[in-house]
Amino acid sequence: MFSIGEVSKRTGVKVPTIRYYEEMGLISPSERSDGNQRRYSRGDVERLTFIRHARDLGFEIDRIRELIALSHHPQAPCDGADRIASAHLAEVRQKIDQLKRLEAELERIVSHCGGHTVEDCYVIRALSDHGLCEHEH
Amino acid sequence: MFSIGEVSKRTGVKVPTIRYYEEMGLISPSERSDGNQRRYSRGDVERLTFIRHARDLGFEIDRIRELIALSHHPQAPCDGADRIASAHLAEVRQKIDQLKRLEAELERIVSHCGGHTVEDCYVIRALSDHGLCEHEH
DNA sequence: ATAATCCCTCCAGTGACTAGAGGTTCAAGA
DNA sequence: TCTTGAACCTCTAGTCACTGGAGGGATTAT
Ligand SMILES: [Zn+2]
Ligand SMILES: [Zn+2]
Ligand SMILES: [Zn+2]
Ligand SMILES: [Zn+2]
Image 1 (cartoon, protein in one colour):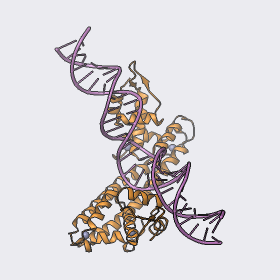
Image 2: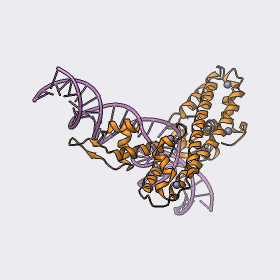
Image 3: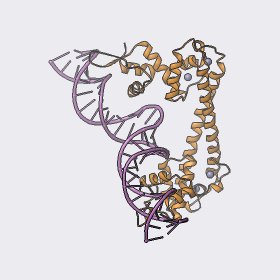
Image 4: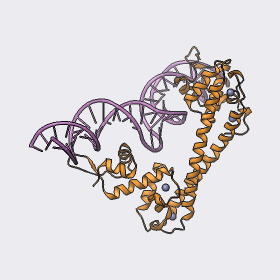
């Protein structure tokens, strides 16, 4: 059995975050020591590793909850999990596209200012007037 | 003088958001009607347009506050504004890079599952084990 | 036995809003 | 002028996924 601090070191999930995950129902309440401290099993460490990795890959808590629920039915078809991952990939791509539009616009704005005073700073002017932009954001 | 609703329509900033910006000190408290309703000038509309555009371009509230402060000194050199915009551009680029790494990893994971059951679903397995990943995230 | 470290619960704060409750003011039509 | 309905007011709480701190108890090593 591991203390919460040991689990934190092993999984890279911070101590308060582990407690938060418990409260959110992502992990079930662990056993306790005689002095009421949390004691975790190897299985708990695995689950937290899973959660950590899914979070690192950008999955939301609710999606992770669904993935965990699915993983409890090993014989069920896996298209549910695949759909969650595909949907997440689509969202990531959308964000990339939007950020690229921002990047282009910001690059243009920044490079345009050969400015001296605030009065004729292109950054300030561009922010004041979307008409100077080349695309929507 | 415009009511808060009119300003909202003109600037695209929602009514509660305008009040929120006032509370945050992004705009100074407006005049009031006899019945205590907010009344805005053309200058207020311009400032909210500026804020809206800066938000659309991803600038944080604090940075916008700084940009507004700078714009009150038209004769000052504009490198402060330029630096804020450049720093923001750098952050946007960093986010794009990170999301691209996620995209690559997710694409690989999703396309790898020719799966049938949850038991041998590659999505679930990949989430359980970062060792299967090709990069850090 | 004592000291250092860890752990407990509870509460508050982050950013940038958004939504709702319960009440007041305004503008326009009859 | 009166009335109706839309728009407005303040205040509070909720969103997401944590993070930090206060004030106290437990564990572990010496
Ligand atoms: Zn400039
Ligand atoms: Zn623009
Ligand atoms: Zn699968
Ligand atoms: Zn990984």
